[in-house]
Image (tube, rainbow, N blue to C red; front, side, top):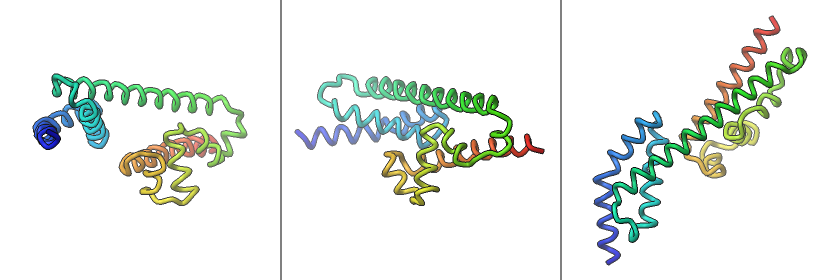
Length: 163
């Protein structure tokens, strides 16, 4: 019985994963996130294997819910960045004229701040940051890149402001 269950799951994965991951890719516009979502949908299907009547429908509904959660998370992060930018704009002149990297790092959203602190301040390799945060290495690299871009933009604005 167990062997046939594993065989059926393996065949379903081979038949549906590429299309599901491609569909997710079109929705989230990121390969790694799409594969994470498709894999998570299959993981959830596997956990309920005996009680799911229509596996294909279950996979797509689950993936759609995960995509929606991803979009919500991105929107929360965008709002946090807008808030941080707005707060920086109303700070006293002296603070803008002399940006402190520590203050800039503190102003990053937690999702970006934690990898920066672990990688650059604790001198941990990306692999270790990945394990500690529970994120894939590619996600950690993307977060580090996004954090550096935010810091670079803020520093550029501060330097332009002082000229």
